[in-house]
Amino acid sequence: MKLVSGVRSFFNGQTQEAFGLGQRTALTSSLRKDIRRHIANLSGADLTGYTYERRRSDYPQAKSDLVIYDPTGKPVLDGRELSGGVSFWPK
Image (cartoon, rainbow, N blue to C red):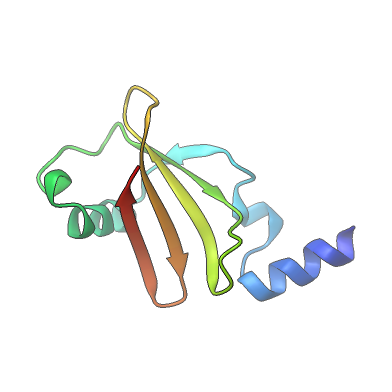
């Protein structure tokens, strides 16, 4: 099993530890900027209470999929990390 996870980590560019294993964490400043740039109604919003969860992606060229949660814990956005950047869309 370590061989499979090692190969998967090599191709998606993330180690198992860096991947997060589905744990929610506070948004980074770069993720806040990307969300504001992609989602017009959140461009001026205070995103300090928002969290995100990183998940494995089945999309061939994605590093990972993201789920963005509002301060109440409700999932509000989906996202995808690609080698060229991040993209978000409403749930």
